[in-house]
Structure formats: structure tokens, C-alpha cells
Length: 449
Image (cartoon, rainbow, N blue to C red; front, side, top):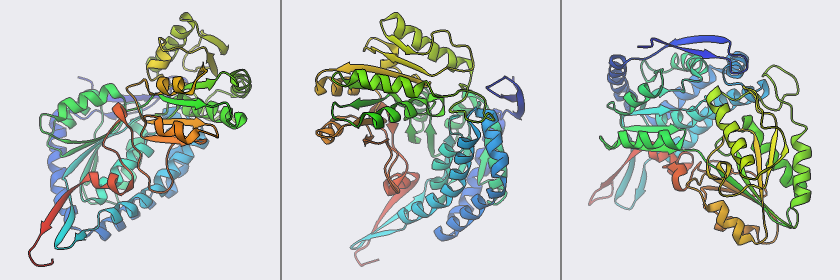
């Protein structure tokens, strides 16, 4: 049995470090100690829990440069984006805590009192593409609600998770936030242990396995399960703005983003001009290591993901797609900026989540055709429409949890981060999302409480 988990730089395969794999008996003990810590934590007043969380997260501020560099080395994104993620995690934590605290305050409806009580132990299983930000969005409301947390980060990015955990856990009560390491086996053991909720961000395939295993104990679930986000470009769209968004969204984080644009449907009346703009912009992107100046995106996380992206490119070209920029010969770990035209429903790039830096386009003559193709997917995380007259109508027809009109997805303030169809099971963010980390309790009394 493997006793350690190595972490390697995706740019060159260099070993960065290793962590100890958490074995079955240890997970059982961690769960027991987590339950004990949760009882004490739940007894703390809500305002005190928020204060302690704020203190813990603020302790990370002096470590921003080191954490950002480690994140870049381990995941591959450039230092500017890594710094942004670390800063967003540190300063977003207290903001989420305040927002969750307001949502979890007791409410009253006449003689009825609504309380939001802790569930118990929450298992957080987080992804590698945003290893701190995604975990943060799940851990903080869970802790504010009075739960303890067992964090299982991705096996691709264990070092940055461990480093972040080591800093904040020193400021929290003992065993309140614990971390376990390993692959899918450790994830399985966590899901099947005595926990009350699994909060997961990751692939649809893994989400289905988690749901199956959680069903044996009816463990609650909050899951974001990826996407295959469409974009519709109407004839009256601001084409330069639409082209800039299409390229930026498709290439962000090397395309390894759940809300990356993966399918673009363009009105035939403007398709030639739009494609020219996209190719021109995409051709200006620079690929390289995290410490190079002027780099727009870096390597893919591993060879498996690289093979998947290449497979999708080859499949599309074999089935008639036009390679407008890039090549079918892509050497790992990078995918050069690639633009494909002539996408059809029979291609993998239209049917599956690619998770790589590809701009994939298709033309339409009737807007209803574009809407049908955009919705023809089991996924429904995000969708975008660029246009003027009729854009609101198109947006209301799109089957997604988050829709952008002439902009990306994601609402302002404390909006929910939510997927439709098979992109989500439950959601986080917003008062309703925060409350999914708590047990609502309805207390009614003949006399007003």
C-alpha cells in the first residue's frame, strides 16, 4: 500500500514534496475526534465562531507570497493568478463568514421560531484547479454553521492544501479542521464514514460515485459537478467584446475551469468576422511556466488531462472541424492556443467537457437552432449570450444555473453559485446556499416564543 503521495510540478515533472497518505484506521480516528471537536464548537455563540474564523484566516496574510509560489509550482498557473487566488481566499473567508452568519440567524414567523442548527461533521472534497478558492467556499459556511470539517484536497495539489491548513488550524480549536490525503480510495472512505454532509466540487463521474456511496447512510450532499458551457453570439452583438470574452473564457486557467466557455454558436451573418477576431486574439496568447513574464496560461495538470484534450482535437478534425489556429501535434504538458471551426453535435468537443484551452465554434442561421444545441447537454452550470435585441429572450431559454448577458456568469454580491441539470446537486453561496450546511429546526409554541 502506498504510504506517501508525491506532488510534482506539471511544467517539468520535478518533485516538489510529498505528504503522508491517510489510511483507513486513521480516517476512523479523525472522524471520532472531529465529532468531539464539533460538540464544543457548536456550543460557541454564532458571533464568536465568526470572530474565531476571521482571526484564523487573517493569520495567513503574511504567508501570501510563499503560498502563491507554491500554488503556481504545484498547479501550473502563473504567479499573478495564484496570488489572486490566495488573496481572494484569505479576504473572502471573513466575508463569507459574515454573510453566512446573517443567513444562519434564528428567524421568527409569528409563534414559530426557525433555528439553523449544526449538522455535525462535514466532509469537504475539493478540486485541483482552484485548490484554495473552491475549498474556501465550502469550508467557511460549514464552520460558521457550527460543524467541524474534514478536508480531503485533490491528490494533484496536496502541498498547497496542507500549507494552508497548517496556518489556519493553529488558530482554530483542536481537531475542528482536519485534513486527509490520498486518491479516490481515501475519498470513498471519507464519504462512507460517520459524517453528516459531503460538500464536493469536481467531475460529474466522481460526483455520481459519491452520491451512490452517500446513499447508504442518506448523507447530505452539496455538489458542483462541472460543465460544458455554451456561448451564443447573435448578429447584433458587440463582436469585439464577444471575441475578447470567448478567447479569455476558453483559455483561462489553461481552460481548466468549470465555467470556461467550451461551445460557441455564432450567427452565420457575422461568423466570418467573429472567427477572424478570435483567431487574431488567440494568436497573441503566450504559453509557459508560472515564473515567465507575459504568460497567459500554463501547462495542463497532468498527462491524462493532456491526452484528453488532444483526443478531443483529433476527434473534431477527423469529423470535419477546421483547425483555424494551432496543431494536432501537441506535446505535453502544454496545449498551444487552439481554435476550431465547424463544430458539430457528433464531435466530443460538443458533447463532453474538454477542460482545456480550446475555442470551439459553430454557425447557426436561426436562433432557435442555437438554443436547442446549447441546451443539448447533461450539463447546465453556466451559459452566456452576447447580443442586443432578443438577448434577454435567449437567456431565459438557456438551461443553466448561471447565465451571463454580454458578460460572464456569476452574480454580484452574495449570489448563489449554482448549476442546473447534472452540473449541480445543491449549491453554495447566498443565504439559501449557506443554510444547506445547517439543519433547519421549526419550533412552534402556543405562546409566542
